[in-house]
Length: 236
Ligand code: 5RP
Image 1: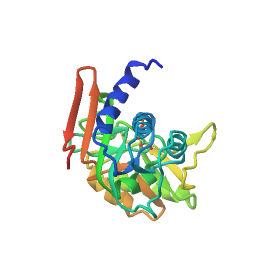
Image 2 (image 1 turned 90 degrees about the vertical axis):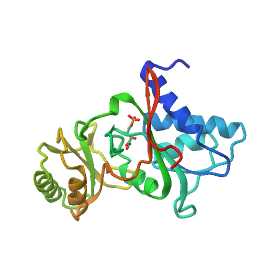
Image 3 (image 1 turned 135 degrees about the horizontal axis):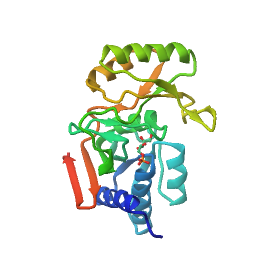
């Protein structure tokens, strides 16, 4: 199957991450089109004898992995993982991420936090100096969504951000996550204080989780036409 140039870059990043995997490892499998390439790579290695156990971050990834005969587990059976490999919607030079474009941010963050290492795979288009160009996804309980939106707006203003906070829709209907929650997409443009905004969002009762991943990624593998670049430490 021939891949488009951008899919080829994603595949290169995924192959580099797959080279980190050894038999006996416990892996977290991310969600999205880039992470799907990694799952494909693991499927190929499993076919060739690799013995790993994996926790998927979404029902979509679970279905893909099952189709490739990858051994699956849960964080209840396997609460500590060696390595999670996932995509991102945006990353900055401090390895801070925006995630959740695919709606899987809650499970992605839980799985990343349960992993000794989180390696992000991406093409260079996701690189920014300051996070916020990508609308920040914020997962919220269905109860009291309008009140929660107001609290998000207040938290944003207090942290120097401005922009529309809109409920994600899917063909006109409310988008509902694997965990049964809604997602607000926050069009902030620039987030001058990502750490401050993350803390403020964490303090809102209706917010289940937000898409700022801070202090989780240990390395980022970036594929561009000139080759592979790595931010952070792949062995950490
Ligand atoms: C899903 C995610 C994805 O990792 C993110 O949206 C990137 O996806 P893609 O690799 O398709 O660009 O956070 O919730």
